[in-house]
Image 1 (cartoon, rainbow, N blue to C red):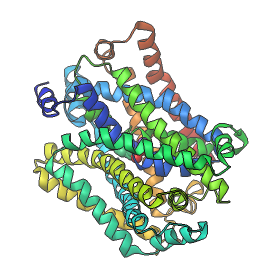
Image 2 (image 1 turned 120 degrees about the vertical axis):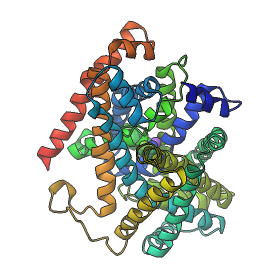
Image 3 (image 1 turned 30 degrees about the vertical axis):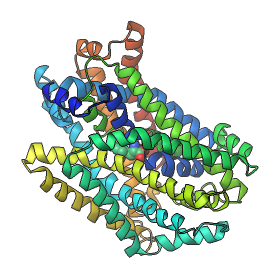
Length: 461
Ligand code: PFF
Ligand code: NA
Protein backbone atom coordinates (compact mmCIF):
# COMPACT_ATOMS: atom_id res chain seq x y z
CA UNK A 1 0.00 0.00 0.00
CA UNK A 2 3.03 2.27 -0.07
CA UNK A 3 2.30 3.42 -3.61
CA UNK A 4 -1.27 4.11 -2.62
CA UNK A 5 -0.32 6.45 0.17
CA UNK A 6 2.21 8.15 -2.09
CA UNK A 7 -0.33 8.94 -4.75
CA UNK A 8 -2.89 10.09 -2.23
CA UNK A 9 -0.36 12.48 -0.77
CA UNK A 10 0.06 13.96 -4.26
CA UNK A 11 -3.60 14.75 -4.32
CA UNK A 12 -2.95 17.38 -1.71
CA UNK A 13 -5.96 19.07 -0.21
CA UNK A 14 -8.50 16.44 -1.05
CA UNK A 15 -9.46 13.65 1.26
CA UNK A 16 -8.76 10.34 -0.40
CA UNK A 17 -12.37 9.33 -0.49
CA UNK A 18 -13.13 12.49 -2.38
CA UNK A 19 -10.21 11.90 -4.74
CA UNK A 20 -11.57 8.45 -5.58
CA UNK A 21 -15.06 9.81 -6.20
CA UNK A 22 -13.62 12.48 -8.48
CA UNK A 23 -11.60 9.99 -10.50
CA UNK A 24 -14.43 7.47 -10.67
CA UNK A 25 -17.11 10.02 -11.63
CA UNK A 26 -14.65 11.54 -14.08
CA UNK A 27 -14.51 8.16 -15.78
CA UNK A 28 -18.21 7.38 -15.44
CA UNK A 29 -19.78 10.69 -16.47
CA UNK A 30 -19.12 11.25 -20.13
CA UNK A 31 -20.58 10.85 -23.59
CA UNK A 32 -22.43 7.79 -22.28
CA UNK A 33 -24.69 10.01 -20.20
CA UNK A 34 -25.30 12.93 -22.50
CA UNK A 35 -24.86 11.50 -25.99
CA UNK A 36 -25.66 7.79 -25.67
CA UNK A 37 -28.34 7.54 -22.98
CA UNK A 38 -30.84 9.86 -24.71
CA UNK A 39 -30.38 8.32 -28.13
CA UNK A 40 -30.62 4.66 -27.04
CA UNK A 41 -33.65 5.58 -24.93
CA UNK A 42 -35.23 7.23 -27.97
CA UNK A 43 -34.46 4.24 -30.20
CA UNK A 44 -35.90 1.80 -27.68
CA UNK A 45 -39.20 3.52 -27.03
CA UNK A 46 -38.62 5.33 -23.70
CA UNK A 47 -40.12 4.40 -20.30
CA UNK A 48 -39.86 0.61 -20.28
CA UNK A 49 -36.26 0.81 -21.52
CA UNK A 50 -35.41 3.42 -18.86
CA UNK A 51 -36.92 1.21 -16.17
CA UNK A 52 -34.85 -1.81 -17.23
CA UNK A 53 -31.75 0.41 -17.42
CA UNK A 54 -32.36 1.72 -13.87
CA UNK A 55 -32.88 -1.84 -12.63
CA UNK A 56 -29.61 -2.90 -14.27
CA UNK A 57 -27.79 0.00 -12.59
CA UNK A 58 -29.11 -0.84 -9.13
CA UNK A 59 -29.19 -4.64 -9.21
CA UNK A 60 -26.19 -5.40 -11.43
CA UNK A 61 -24.05 -2.29 -11.93
CA UNK A 62 -23.74 -1.24 -8.30
CA UNK A 63 -22.82 -4.72 -6.94
CA UNK A 64 -20.27 -5.20 -9.73
CA UNK A 65 -18.80 -1.78 -9.11
CA UNK A 66 -18.37 -2.77 -5.47
CA UNK A 67 -16.75 -6.03 -6.55
CA UNK A 68 -14.31 -4.25 -8.87
CA UNK A 69 -13.34 -1.70 -6.24
CA UNK A 70 -12.84 -4.37 -3.61
CA UNK A 71 -10.69 -6.55 -5.87
CA UNK A 72 -8.60 -3.50 -6.76
CA UNK A 73 -8.16 -2.42 -3.17
CA UNK A 74 -7.34 -5.96 -2.04
CA UNK A 75 -4.72 -6.41 -4.76
CA UNK A 76 -3.41 -2.86 -4.43
CA UNK A 77 -1.95 -2.81 -7.98
CA UNK A 78 -2.93 -2.48 -11.61
CA UNK A 79 -5.87 -4.81 -12.51
CA UNK A 80 -3.81 -7.56 -14.13
CA UNK A 81 -1.38 -7.60 -11.21
CA UNK A 82 -4.11 -7.25 -8.58
CA UNK A 83 -5.81 -10.32 -9.96
CA UNK A 84 -2.47 -12.13 -10.11
CA UNK A 85 -1.66 -11.08 -6.54
CA UNK A 86 -5.00 -12.34 -5.21
CA UNK A 87 -4.81 -15.59 -7.17
CA UNK A 88 -1.26 -16.24 -5.92
CA UNK A 89 -2.08 -15.50 -2.30
CA UNK A 90 -5.08 -17.76 -2.40
CA UNK A 91 -3.41 -20.26 -4.77
CA UNK A 92 -6.16 -19.86 -7.36
CA UNK A 93 -6.08 -20.37 -11.09
CA UNK A 94 -3.79 -17.67 -12.54
CA UNK A 95 -5.87 -17.38 -15.73
CA UNK A 96 -8.13 -15.00 -13.83
CA UNK A 97 -5.77 -12.21 -14.73
CA UNK A 98 -7.20 -12.44 -18.25
CA UNK A 99 -10.21 -10.57 -16.89
CA UNK A 100 -7.85 -7.61 -16.89
CA UNK A 101 -6.86 -8.41 -20.48
CA UNK A 102 -10.48 -8.17 -21.72
CA UNK A 103 -10.43 -4.67 -20.32
CA UNK A 104 -7.36 -3.75 -22.29
CA UNK A 105 -8.91 -4.90 -25.58
CA UNK A 106 -12.30 -3.31 -24.85
CA UNK A 107 -10.49 -0.07 -24.00
CA UNK A 108 -8.85 0.03 -27.45
CA UNK A 109 -12.09 -0.59 -29.28
CA UNK A 110 -14.21 1.84 -27.22
CA UNK A 111 -11.71 4.68 -27.29
CA UNK A 112 -11.45 4.44 -31.09
CA UNK A 113 -15.07 5.49 -31.62
CA UNK A 114 -15.46 7.45 -28.37
CA UNK A 115 -12.82 9.83 -29.66
CA UNK A 116 -14.72 10.33 -32.92
CA UNK A 117 -17.84 11.40 -31.00
CA UNK A 118 -15.64 13.52 -28.70
CA UNK A 119 -14.54 15.15 -31.96
CA UNK A 120 -18.16 16.06 -32.78
CA UNK A 121 -18.33 17.91 -29.49
CA UNK A 122 -15.06 19.71 -30.26
CA UNK A 123 -16.43 20.80 -33.61
CA UNK A 124 -19.66 22.10 -32.01
CA UNK A 125 -17.76 24.48 -29.71
CA UNK A 126 -16.81 26.55 -32.73
CA UNK A 127 -20.25 26.27 -34.30
CA UNK A 128 -21.92 27.49 -31.11
CA UNK A 129 -19.37 30.23 -30.45
CA UNK A 130 -19.80 31.74 -33.90
CA UNK A 131 -23.55 32.01 -33.38
CA UNK A 132 -24.46 29.55 -36.14
CA UNK A 133 -27.31 28.06 -34.11
CA UNK A 134 -29.00 31.36 -33.32
CA UNK A 135 -32.58 31.43 -34.55
CA UNK A 136 -32.14 28.38 -36.79
CA UNK A 137 -34.89 25.95 -37.70
CA UNK A 138 -34.68 22.25 -36.90
CA UNK A 139 -33.98 21.61 -40.58
CA UNK A 140 -31.07 24.04 -40.72
CA UNK A 141 -29.57 22.54 -37.57
CA UNK A 142 -30.02 19.05 -39.00
CA UNK A 143 -28.08 20.20 -42.05
CA UNK A 144 -25.18 21.48 -39.94
CA UNK A 145 -24.94 18.00 -38.42
CA UNK A 146 -25.27 16.03 -41.64
CA UNK A 147 -22.69 18.28 -43.31
CA UNK A 148 -20.26 17.45 -40.52
CA UNK A 149 -20.83 13.69 -40.88
CA UNK A 150 -20.42 13.88 -44.64
CA UNK A 151 -16.94 15.35 -44.33
CA UNK A 152 -14.32 12.72 -43.38
CA UNK A 153 -11.39 15.13 -43.25
CA UNK A 154 -13.06 17.50 -40.80
CA UNK A 155 -14.11 14.54 -38.66
CA UNK A 156 -10.55 13.25 -38.79
CA UNK A 157 -9.18 16.61 -37.70
CA UNK A 158 -11.41 16.79 -34.59
CA UNK A 159 -10.90 13.10 -33.78
CA UNK A 160 -7.14 13.70 -33.94
CA UNK A 161 -7.40 16.69 -31.64
CA UNK A 162 -9.51 14.81 -29.09
CA UNK A 163 -7.15 11.83 -29.14
CA UNK A 164 -4.16 14.15 -28.70
CA UNK A 165 -5.79 15.69 -25.62
CA UNK A 166 -6.27 12.24 -24.09
CA UNK A 167 -2.75 11.11 -24.95
CA UNK A 168 -1.22 14.27 -23.55
CA UNK A 169 -2.55 13.64 -20.06
CA UNK A 170 -1.85 9.90 -20.10
CA UNK A 171 1.71 10.42 -21.37
CA UNK A 172 2.50 12.90 -18.63
CA UNK A 173 0.99 10.62 -16.01
CA UNK A 174 -0.53 13.64 -14.29
CA UNK A 175 -4.11 13.23 -13.35
CA UNK A 176 -4.29 14.99 -10.01
CA UNK A 177 -4.81 18.41 -11.56
CA UNK A 178 -7.46 17.11 -13.87
CA UNK A 179 -9.27 15.32 -11.11
CA UNK A 180 -9.36 18.50 -9.13
CA UNK A 181 -10.87 20.27 -12.13
CA UNK A 182 -13.61 17.62 -12.16
CA UNK A 183 -14.84 18.98 -8.83
CA UNK A 184 -15.58 22.35 -10.48
CA UNK A 185 -16.46 21.40 -14.03
CA UNK A 186 -18.83 18.52 -13.25
CA UNK A 187 -21.08 20.69 -11.09
CA UNK A 188 -20.90 23.32 -13.84
CA UNK A 189 -22.04 20.76 -16.41
CA UNK A 190 -24.83 19.73 -14.06
CA UNK A 191 -25.96 23.36 -13.67
CA UNK A 192 -25.91 23.99 -17.41
CA UNK A 193 -27.97 20.86 -17.97
CA UNK A 194 -30.41 22.19 -15.38
CA UNK A 195 -30.57 25.45 -17.30
CA UNK A 196 -31.43 23.56 -20.50
CA UNK A 197 -34.06 21.56 -18.58
CA UNK A 198 -35.45 24.93 -17.45
CA UNK A 199 -35.61 26.08 -21.05
CA UNK A 200 -37.13 22.75 -22.09
CA UNK A 201 -39.93 23.31 -19.57
CA UNK A 202 -40.98 26.42 -21.50
CA UNK A 203 -41.39 24.50 -24.78
CA UNK A 204 -44.76 23.16 -23.69
CA UNK A 205 -43.81 19.54 -24.23
CA UNK A 206 -42.18 18.88 -20.87
CA UNK A 207 -45.04 16.69 -19.65
CA UNK A 208 -44.90 14.58 -22.76
CA UNK A 209 -41.15 14.11 -22.28
CA UNK A 210 -41.62 13.08 -18.65
CA UNK A 211 -44.19 10.46 -19.57
CA UNK A 212 -42.03 9.29 -22.48
CA UNK A 213 -39.14 8.74 -20.05
CA UNK A 214 -40.96 7.43 -17.00
CA UNK A 215 -44.21 5.79 -18.12
CA UNK A 216 -43.24 2.26 -19.07
CA UNK A 217 -44.95 0.86 -22.14
CA UNK A 218 -43.72 -2.72 -22.25
CA UNK A 219 -45.10 -3.32 -25.71
CA UNK A 220 -42.24 -1.13 -26.95
CA UNK A 221 -39.51 -3.15 -25.24
CA UNK A 222 -37.74 -5.78 -27.34
CA UNK A 223 -35.29 -8.51 -26.36
CA UNK A 224 -32.60 -6.56 -28.15
CA UNK A 225 -33.64 -3.47 -26.15
CA UNK A 226 -33.03 -5.32 -22.88
CA UNK A 227 -29.52 -6.21 -24.07
CA UNK A 228 -28.88 -2.56 -24.94
CA UNK A 229 -30.12 -1.45 -21.49
CA UNK A 230 -27.85 -3.97 -19.77
CA UNK A 231 -24.87 -3.07 -21.93
CA UNK A 232 -25.46 0.62 -21.41
CA UNK A 233 -25.51 0.17 -17.62
CA UNK A 234 -21.99 -1.28 -17.87
CA UNK A 235 -20.83 1.32 -20.36
CA UNK A 236 -22.11 4.31 -18.43
CA UNK A 237 -20.62 3.16 -15.12
CA UNK A 238 -17.28 2.25 -16.77
CA UNK A 239 -17.68 -1.35 -15.62
CA UNK A 240 -16.48 -4.62 -17.06
CA UNK A 241 -13.06 -3.45 -18.13
CA UNK A 242 -11.34 -3.11 -14.79
CA UNK A 243 -11.25 0.70 -14.69
CA UNK A 244 -12.91 0.79 -11.27
CA UNK A 245 -10.54 -1.97 -10.20
CA UNK A 246 -7.58 0.23 -11.11
CA UNK A 247 -9.06 3.18 -9.23
CA UNK A 248 -9.98 0.97 -6.27
CA UNK A 249 -6.31 0.27 -5.68
CA UNK A 250 -6.00 3.91 -4.57
CA UNK A 251 -8.85 3.77 -2.08
CA UNK A 252 -7.75 3.84 1.57
CA UNK A 253 -8.79 0.92 3.75
CA UNK A 254 -11.04 2.89 6.08
CA UNK A 255 -13.37 4.16 3.33
CA UNK A 256 -16.71 2.45 2.76
CA UNK A 257 -16.73 0.80 -0.66
CA UNK A 258 -20.52 0.57 -0.67
CA UNK A 259 -21.19 4.24 0.11
CA UNK A 260 -18.59 5.46 -2.34
CA UNK A 261 -19.89 3.23 -5.12
CA UNK A 262 -23.46 4.36 -4.45
CA UNK A 263 -22.33 7.98 -4.76
CA UNK A 264 -20.76 7.32 -8.17
CA UNK A 265 -23.86 5.44 -9.43
CA UNK A 266 -26.22 8.18 -8.24
CA UNK A 267 -24.22 10.99 -9.84
CA UNK A 268 -23.90 9.12 -13.12
CA UNK A 269 -27.60 8.24 -13.27
CA UNK A 270 -28.59 11.76 -12.27
CA UNK A 271 -26.63 13.28 -15.15
CA UNK A 272 -28.16 10.81 -17.64
CA UNK A 273 -31.74 11.46 -16.52
CA UNK A 274 -31.17 15.20 -16.57
CA UNK A 275 -29.86 14.91 -20.13
CA UNK A 276 -33.03 13.03 -21.06
CA UNK A 277 -35.21 15.71 -19.48
CA UNK A 278 -33.29 18.39 -21.35
CA UNK A 279 -33.52 16.74 -24.76
CA UNK A 280 -36.93 15.08 -25.14
CA UNK A 281 -39.10 18.20 -24.64
CA UNK A 282 -37.12 19.79 -27.49
CA UNK A 283 -37.56 16.66 -29.60
CA UNK A 284 -41.35 16.70 -29.17
CA UNK A 285 -41.77 20.47 -29.43
CA UNK A 286 -40.00 20.50 -32.80
CA UNK A 287 -41.63 17.40 -34.22
CA UNK A 288 -38.31 15.53 -34.30
CA UNK A 289 -37.87 11.78 -34.17
CA UNK A 290 -36.92 10.34 -30.71
CA UNK A 291 -35.30 7.38 -32.48
CA UNK A 292 -33.10 9.60 -34.66
CA UNK A 293 -29.98 7.74 -33.48
CA UNK A 294 -26.48 8.88 -32.55
CA UNK A 295 -27.05 12.43 -33.81
CA UNK A 296 -29.91 13.10 -31.40
CA UNK A 297 -28.24 15.55 -29.01
CA UNK A 298 -26.38 17.26 -31.83
CA UNK A 299 -29.68 17.98 -33.54
CA UNK A 300 -31.74 18.97 -30.51
CA UNK A 301 -29.57 20.85 -28.01
CA UNK A 302 -28.42 23.40 -30.63
CA UNK A 303 -32.10 24.26 -31.19
CA UNK A 304 -32.41 25.14 -27.51
CA UNK A 305 -29.19 27.15 -27.60
CA UNK A 306 -30.39 28.89 -30.73
CA UNK A 307 -33.57 30.05 -29.04
CA UNK A 308 -32.68 30.80 -25.41
CA UNK A 309 -31.26 34.16 -24.29
CA UNK A 310 -27.44 34.16 -24.36
CA UNK A 311 -27.70 30.84 -26.18
CA UNK A 312 -24.37 31.18 -28.00
CA UNK A 313 -22.59 31.60 -24.69
CA UNK A 314 -24.45 28.73 -23.02
CA UNK A 315 -23.99 26.53 -26.06
CA UNK A 316 -20.25 27.17 -26.21
CA UNK A 317 -19.88 26.48 -22.51
CA UNK A 318 -21.99 23.36 -22.75
CA UNK A 319 -19.92 21.77 -25.51
CA UNK A 320 -16.68 22.71 -23.72
CA UNK A 321 -17.94 20.98 -20.58
CA UNK A 322 -19.06 17.99 -22.64
CA UNK A 323 -15.54 17.71 -24.09
CA UNK A 324 -14.15 17.87 -20.60
CA UNK A 325 -16.45 15.07 -19.40
CA UNK A 326 -15.51 12.98 -22.44
CA UNK A 327 -11.82 13.77 -21.91
CA UNK A 328 -11.71 12.38 -18.37
CA UNK A 329 -13.53 9.24 -19.58
CA UNK A 330 -11.19 8.89 -22.55
CA UNK A 331 -8.19 9.05 -20.23
CA UNK A 332 -9.64 6.23 -18.16
CA UNK A 333 -10.01 4.16 -21.33
CA UNK A 334 -6.39 4.64 -22.43
CA UNK A 335 -4.74 4.47 -19.01
CA UNK A 336 -5.21 0.69 -18.42
CA UNK A 337 -3.74 -0.11 -21.83
CA UNK A 338 -0.71 2.06 -21.22
CA UNK A 339 -0.21 0.67 -17.73
CA UNK A 340 -0.43 -2.84 -19.09
CA UNK A 341 2.18 -2.13 -21.79
CA UNK A 342 4.47 -0.59 -19.20
CA UNK A 343 4.17 -3.52 -16.82
CA UNK A 344 4.06 -6.43 -19.23
CA UNK A 345 6.20 -5.20 -22.09
CA UNK A 346 8.56 -2.95 -20.16
CA UNK A 347 7.86 0.04 -22.40
CA UNK A 348 8.23 3.60 -21.15
CA UNK A 349 5.10 5.63 -20.51
CA UNK A 350 5.72 7.91 -23.47
CA UNK A 351 6.32 5.06 -25.92
CA UNK A 352 3.33 3.05 -24.74
CA UNK A 353 1.05 6.11 -24.88
CA UNK A 354 2.22 6.96 -28.39
CA UNK A 355 1.86 3.34 -29.54
CA UNK A 356 -1.53 2.62 -27.99
CA UNK A 357 -2.84 6.06 -28.89
CA UNK A 358 -1.79 5.63 -32.50
CA UNK A 359 -3.59 2.29 -32.80
CA UNK A 360 -6.80 3.76 -31.31
CA UNK A 361 -6.53 6.77 -33.59
CA UNK A 362 -6.06 4.61 -36.69
CA UNK A 363 -8.97 2.37 -35.72
CA UNK A 364 -11.08 5.50 -35.30
CA UNK A 365 -10.73 6.15 -39.03
CA UNK A 366 -12.95 3.12 -39.68
CA UNK A 367 -15.65 4.71 -37.51
CA UNK A 368 -15.27 8.03 -39.34
CA UNK A 369 -15.70 6.35 -42.72
CA UNK A 370 -18.76 4.47 -41.39
CA UNK A 371 -20.48 7.85 -41.18
CA UNK A 372 -19.97 8.70 -44.86
CA UNK A 373 -18.09 6.71 -47.51
CA UNK A 374 -18.75 3.35 -45.85
CA UNK A 375 -22.20 4.16 -44.45
CA UNK A 376 -23.77 1.39 -46.54
CA UNK A 377 -21.14 -1.19 -45.55
CA UNK A 378 -22.45 -3.69 -42.97
CA UNK A 379 -19.66 -6.29 -42.70
CA UNK A 380 -21.68 -8.71 -40.53
CA UNK A 381 -25.07 -7.77 -41.95
CA UNK A 382 -25.93 -11.41 -42.77
CA UNK A 383 -26.34 -12.09 -39.04
CA UNK A 384 -29.93 -11.16 -38.18
CA UNK A 385 -29.12 -9.14 -35.07
CA UNK A 386 -26.34 -7.22 -36.84
CA UNK A 387 -28.29 -6.31 -39.96
CA UNK A 388 -27.43 -2.87 -41.30
CA UNK A 389 -24.78 -2.22 -38.65
CA UNK A 390 -21.78 -0.24 -39.89
CA UNK A 391 -18.28 -0.74 -38.46
CA UNK A 392 -18.99 2.06 -36.01
CA UNK A 393 -22.27 0.39 -34.92
CA UNK A 394 -20.50 -2.97 -34.57
CA UNK A 395 -17.72 -1.56 -32.40
CA UNK A 396 -20.31 0.02 -30.14
CA UNK A 397 -22.42 -3.15 -30.09
CA UNK A 398 -19.63 -5.62 -29.34
CA UNK A 399 -17.93 -3.54 -26.68
CA UNK A 400 -20.93 -2.22 -24.75
CA UNK A 401 -23.34 -5.11 -25.22
CA UNK A 402 -21.00 -8.12 -25.24
CA UNK A 403 -17.51 -7.42 -23.89
CA UNK A 404 -18.39 -5.23 -20.91
CA UNK A 405 -21.21 -7.48 -19.60
CA UNK A 406 -18.90 -10.48 -20.11
CA UNK A 407 -16.08 -8.73 -18.23
CA UNK A 408 -18.56 -7.81 -15.49
CA UNK A 409 -19.83 -11.37 -15.35
CA UNK A 410 -16.29 -12.68 -14.83
CA UNK A 411 -15.71 -10.11 -12.08
CA UNK A 412 -18.93 -11.21 -10.39
CA UNK A 413 -17.99 -14.88 -10.62
CA UNK A 414 -14.49 -14.18 -9.35
CA UNK A 415 -15.77 -12.21 -6.38
CA UNK A 416 -18.77 -14.45 -5.72
CA UNK A 417 -17.26 -17.88 -6.15
CA UNK A 418 -13.48 -17.69 -6.14
CA UNK A 419 -12.19 -15.07 -3.72
CA UNK A 420 -12.08 -15.89 -0.04
CA UNK A 421 -15.15 -14.82 1.82
CA UNK A 422 -13.10 -13.46 4.67
CA UNK A 423 -11.18 -11.11 2.38
CA UNK A 424 -14.44 -9.74 1.02
CA UNK A 425 -16.04 -9.31 4.42
CA UNK A 426 -13.01 -7.37 5.54
CA UNK A 427 -13.03 -5.14 2.49
CA UNK A 428 -16.72 -4.37 2.41
CA UNK A 429 -17.20 -4.10 6.19
CA UNK A 430 -20.99 -4.31 5.80
CA UNK A 431 -23.58 -5.55 8.25
CA UNK A 432 -24.29 -9.25 7.88
CA UNK A 433 -27.60 -8.93 6.00
CA UNK A 434 -26.16 -6.31 3.64
CA UNK A 435 -23.09 -8.43 2.94
CA UNK A 436 -25.26 -11.45 2.22
CA UNK A 437 -27.47 -9.41 -0.09
CA UNK A 438 -24.39 -8.34 -2.03
CA UNK A 439 -22.99 -11.87 -2.11
CA UNK A 440 -26.24 -13.37 -3.38
CA UNK A 441 -26.33 -10.71 -6.06
CA UNK A 442 -22.84 -11.33 -7.43
CA UNK A 443 -23.16 -15.10 -7.02
CA UNK A 444 -26.57 -15.64 -8.56
CA UNK A 445 -28.47 -12.59 -9.74
CA UNK A 446 -25.76 -11.09 -11.95
CA UNK A 447 -24.68 -14.33 -13.67
CA UNK A 448 -28.29 -15.43 -14.22
CA UNK A 449 -29.40 -12.01 -15.48
CA UNK A 450 -26.47 -11.53 -17.85
CA UNK A 451 -26.67 -15.18 -18.99
CA UNK A 452 -30.41 -14.97 -19.66
CA UNK A 453 -30.15 -11.77 -21.65
CA UNK A 454 -27.32 -13.24 -23.75
CA UNK A 455 -29.14 -16.51 -24.42
CA UNK A 456 -32.41 -14.79 -25.37
CA UNK A 457 -30.60 -12.55 -27.82
CA UNK A 458 -28.69 -15.45 -29.36
CA UNK A 459 -31.89 -17.40 -29.83
CA UNK A 460 -33.52 -14.34 -31.34
CA UNK A 461 -30.64 -13.89 -33.74
N1 PFF B 1 -18.51 5.67 -18.68
C1 PFF B 1 -18.13 6.44 -19.83
C2 PFF B 1 -19.33 7.24 -20.31
O1 PFF B 1 -20.45 7.04 -19.81
O2 PFF B 1 -19.17 8.06 -21.20
C3 PFF B 1 -17.57 5.60 -20.94
C4 PFF B 1 -16.55 4.60 -20.47
C5 PFF B 1 -15.37 5.04 -19.84
C6 PFF B 1 -16.80 3.25 -20.59
C7 PFF B 1 -14.46 4.11 -19.36
C8 PFF B 1 -15.91 2.31 -20.11
C9 PFF B 1 -14.76 2.77 -19.49
F1 PFF B 1 -13.91 1.89 -19.05
NA1 NA C 1 -21.57 7.38 -17.79
